[in-house]
Image 1 (cartoon, one colour):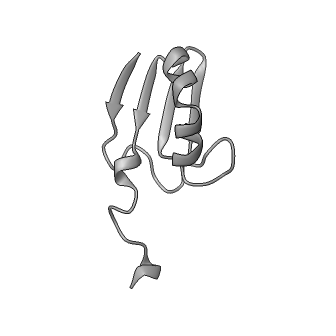
Image 2 (spheres, one colour):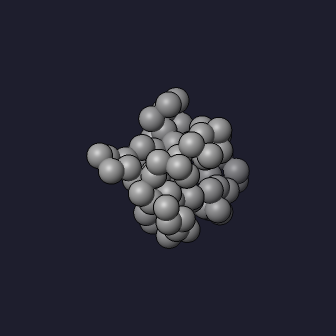
Image 3 (cartoon, one colour):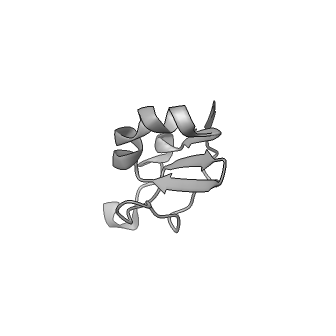
Length: 72
């Protein structure tokens, strides 16, 4: 398994968690596809994903890196 830090443009706000529909910050590339997870579900399943993923991308560093318009 390879862990890669995502560039901020790799996942966008249009990418959604496969569990709950929140914005995705984790991508698990599997042998037969990929799964996207929000930060909460990515952390919850991180140990198992590390065992089965071909590549695991963690983009949680991008959380709050750009304030939302509501913050102004």
